Image (tube, rainbow, N blue to C red; front, top):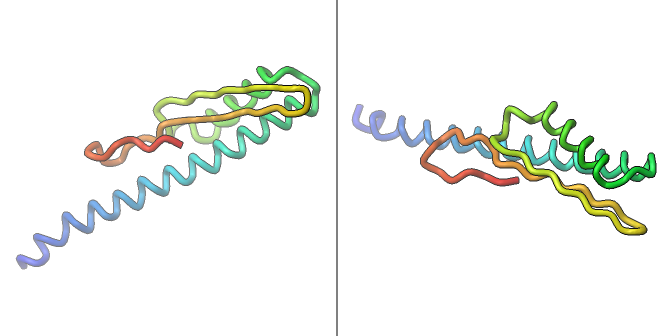
Length: 102
């Protein structure tokens, strides 16, 4: 009985940590895809980097908007490259641990 009382909180916290890192991994994959699609859109239509940034933001918000608390997008363009970056803070499952930024 005493072992159960000691182990249940440990198992619950460990399960919550697994869920937290699963959410972070999912949001990270969505951010990578959204930024790549944003850069592809800006390059394909010969638009400015701002259009690619808007597409990336729209895709990320539609796909993983509820997994994050704040989303930031940035874009940059040169003569040969377009870079679109999506950064977000993942929702915290356990309030005792710091937020994960992807």
